Length: 236
Ligand code: HEM
View (cartoon, rainbow, N blue to C red):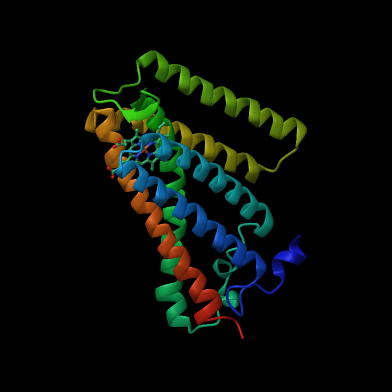
């Protein structure tokens, strides 16, 4: 697998197969999200909802594949070896772009999962078509407690599995604790969001547009990173 990914790519003369495939996939799923936005704008709630699900699944597959295949190999973060341009461009343009990209990807992933659940909660089926329902959308204290306890229980079960079966390192346990912690944090933040934007439909539109803008920016920053690494400043 590693050998295939290190073969020359097909997009730019210095790109590798791994870089080209992952860039193309990122391009495809981001565009799918933006098309889903168009459907929502045209009030085609069901098409919007279906395409969002397809985009989410492809995005998750992409991330898992990317992680395993390239070991999060943003090689240029480990040092300047992967970047063939001048030091000033590396420090002042490349690293800020890449950092912005990684921050946006993290934010975009969290928001996409949040919006997916909010979308189901905030909409109803009217004559077979999904439509947002107006009115306050709140998590009851009881549901909130159940959700939090479920997250803690899942974390506990996963931790036992990691320690007893996989004999995972401390780093792996910390990474999982951070993932479960982020989920718990998002659920807690929901309480604050409910106060700021009580109407579920309005919340979906405002936060949904924010999420779509993040996806647009991810597309721009990933294109810029790709161009700098493999087209403008490839390693000679
Ligand atoms: C990542 C997840 C999602 C994002 C980013 C998102 C984003 C958006 C945005 C931006 C709009 C408003 C469009 C505009 O006026 O500019 C919207 C509307 C809508 N969304 Fe979502 N959405 C997501 C998931 C869902 C899900 C899972 C459902 C249903 C189960 C859903 C149902 C709807 C409906 C019914 C509308 C209203 C369309 C209309 O105006 O008739 N969304 N969404």
